[in-house]
Amino acid sequence: MIDLLLTNGTVITMDPQRRIIDTGAVAVDKGRIIKVGKASEVGQQFQANKVIDCRDHIILPGLIDAHGHAGHTMFKNLLMEHSSFWMKILTNTYKHFVTDDFWYYEGKLSALERLKAGVTTGVSVMGSMPRSDDAVFGCNHARAYAEAGLREIVCPGPCNPPWPHEFSRWKDGKRIQKLVTYEEVLEGMEGVIQTWNHGANDRIRVFATPFVIVSSVEPSSKTPADRAIELTDHDRYQMRRIREIADKYHTRIHSDAFGGMIRMVYQQDYALLGPDIHLQHLSGISTDEVEILAETGTHVSSAGSGFGGSRCPVTSLISAGVPVAISTDGTPFDLLQMARKFRLIHTLISQDPFDLPAGKILEMITIDAAKVVGWENEIGSLEENKKADIITIDLRAAHLAPNFLPVHRLIFEATGSDVDNVIVDGQMVMESHKVLTLNEEEVLSQAQEESLSTIERAGLNEYLSVPPGFWGRAHLYLGKPSQP
Image (cartoon, rainbow, N blue to C red; front, side, top):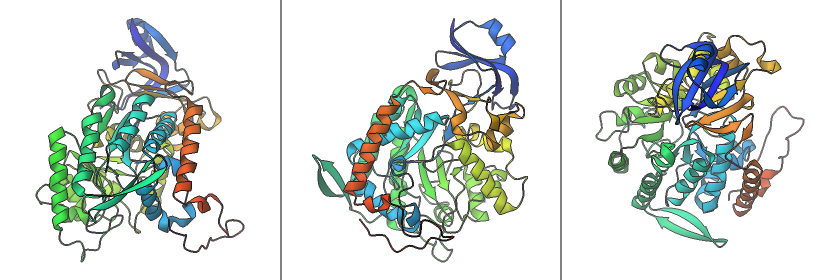
C-alpha cells in the first residue's frame, strides 16, 4: 500500500523526454515519486491510502520561483505612484522600522500566497536589500515556510557600503539603533545558514546573498563602460568572504548583477561567477558578458522587467547555453501570470512572436528553475525517485476549456487561482483549494495588523490614500514624497 496516487489526469512530466501522458498517473510513497505512466498501468500496479481523481486536470511539477523578496507582501502597491523613491523608502523601512516578528508574519503570508499559486519552492531575499545584522530575521522567515510545508531558499547577506552601517531593532515598542560592522552582518548571515540550511527535512536551504556582486558601481542598473573599470578593496574583500562562507557550509550563492559587473569580476580571484551561483536581473549585459556567463557556467534568473532602461538578453543567454529561470522578483507570486508577462515583454521587444515558445517558458519555471537553484536532481520534474512536489490544475473552467494543448493552456490562459492541489515532499499542503498547513484567517489577520503597524512606525500613512490626479487624467504628476 503506497501513500498517494494521482490518476486520470494529463501528466506533464518535464522529464528529459518532456513526456505528456494523457489519462496518466503519478504514484507517491514516502515523499518520493515511485511511478509515472498511464493510469491503467499504474493503477493496476499500486493500491494507495489516498487516491485523487485528476480527471479534467493537469498534473505537473510544483513551480519554482528563483528570486523574490521577503517583506514585499506586506507592502503591496505601497508607493506605486512614487516608484522613483520606492527603493529608498522601503529599504529604510526594512532597516529601521520592522520588528523581529514582522519576518515571521510576512513569511507566513508570502508562503500562503505562493502555495495557493502552485509555487512549491521560492527564493526569498531578506528585504529590498538583504538584511542580516541578526540571524533572527532569516530564521523567523524560514520557520514560517517550514510550518507552511513549502520549500524555501532563504537569502540573507550584506547590503552595500558604507560600513559600519546603521540598523534598528524594536524592543518593547522602542527603537534601538546600532552601528553594525560588515563582519557582524556576515555573522548574521552565517547564523541563518547554521540554523536552517537543509532544515525541515531539507525543505529549507540558505544561500549566501550579497546585494550585488560589485558594490562600488550602479546597484540597480547598467554601469557605463567608462565607469565599470576597477574593483575596490571592499569589492574584492566581499567576494572572498562570501566565497569562504559558502564553501565552509557547502551552500550556494545568490546575488543581483547588471551590465558591466560581469566583465569587472571575470578572471578575478573569488569572482562570484560559476555553477554554484545564480544571478538575478542581468539587465544591460553585453555580448561579451553573455559569453562569460556561458563559459563560467553561471546561472541566471529574470523577471523580465527592465532596470535603468535596459533589459536582460534572455534569448541570447539561452542560445549560449546559460540556464535561465523566470522569477517573480517579489509579490505578486503568481508565477504562471508572471511567465505570461515575461514572454509578452520579450516578444514585444524582439518583435518576433516565435521567441520563447510555451514549452521553453514552462521549462523556465520548473526544470530550468530547479537547475538555476541547484536542486534539479530532486525537484523540477515528475520522475521516479525524485521528491514528490506536485500540483494539479483544474481545467473545468471557461477560460481553460476545451481540454487540449495543455502546455498552451498553462502558459497562455491559466493563473495561480486555477491550482487546486499542492503536494510538497509527498505531503498534501492544499487539497481542493483548501490549505491544510496554515490557518488562512489567522495568517491574513496577523499580516494585516503587522503591516499597518509597520507603516505607522515608518511614517508612511500618507501613501495609504490615492494621490491628487489619480482620477480622470491620462498622466499622473506628483510632487516629491516626504522622506521617512
